[in-house]
Length: 79
Image (cartoon, rainbow, N blue to C red; front, side, top):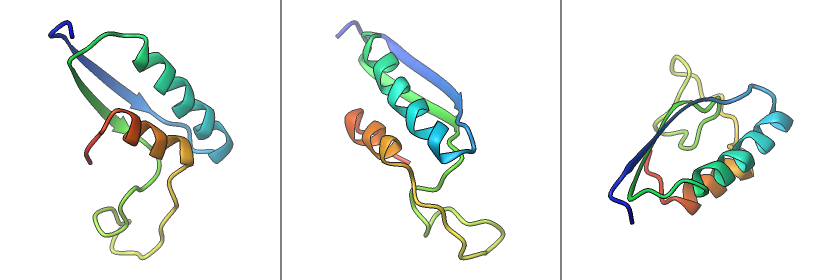
């Protein structure tokens, strides 16, 4: 615990096959920096909670990629 804050600003790819590797690489990258607090912000190009995230009231949802779920769980992120 270094008492430092790591801030990550991201723009995830649109394509599902690219997202998988993007988030896997991000987990590895974040893990390489010692930090006591983590802030991740940006455009994830997916929805994690359909009840919170809608497109103009549409019920259209896209399941989050498994690697994004891994990122959220690994670092105990909150949406």
